[in-house]
Length: 164
Image 1 (cartoon, rainbow, N blue to C red):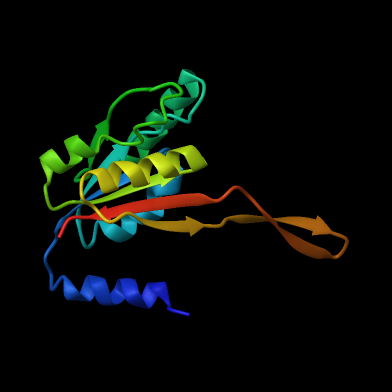
Image 2 (cartoon, rainbow, N blue to C red):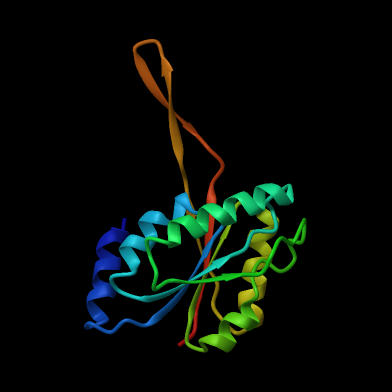
């Protein structure tokens, strides 16, 4: 099995001090803190805040405000926000706009619903990008007598497309 941290370390070393642009996707502030802290050392980051799965609109706005608070710690990261989209899942990200801003961008879209995962992969392949999907599993502990069980939460999928 490949160690992805080592693979990432090799990729970052291959940058040779360059700081290419990287557009990340986020659907809330707290879950982006580590990724922002880690990747701002190596990339010029843009953050696309977009998730049509968030209901109701007030929840979307609350998460957006939290994202803005997080970004106060990262003033060089540019926020791209397209507004609440309701239940629109057929277009998970404005890939056209992202590629217009940075034609050599690596695009990363997070998905929590299978419909969004499918739409994200289709949007990337429609632009000639090879969509790669990574599933991230998150678990929480639950006491069971003197033991602690790991209880799985819903997975998160990261769909990436890279321009060569």
